[in-house]
Image 1 (cartoon, rainbow, N blue to C red):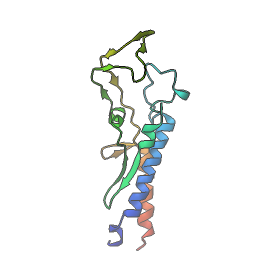
Image 2: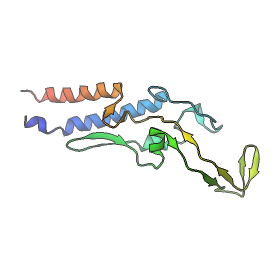
Image 3: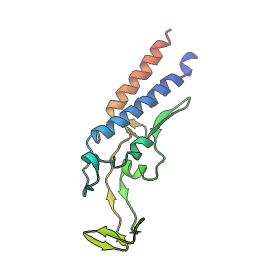
Image 4: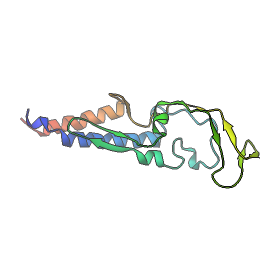
Length: 151
């Protein structure tokens, strides 16, 4: 019992497995598959969803403590892609130059009404529930660790 109280190796292994499952979600474009893009930009290489620059996938990092393990992202837009939601109305102005090309016309600024973003869960779980692939893998890691403790 005392040896099983030290779960750090199993939790570290579980966090790394959940990270691998998140990477698999990006590679498969969701498991189950994410909703496609309404207006895919021409610049998107390979048409991969949530991977325009790769920052979101690269930001997913594992964590573990003596009692829990998981993965997360600190990017401000990470949550809206995981859970979905609606962006607020906002004004778009050019970062470089004097005008934007929007809808085939050049403009100094555009008033965007906001957008409804569908959930595209790239992290392999919500709350305490893991997606089936991740759950099986983590249970295997914890079971193997407990078995290695012997009797």
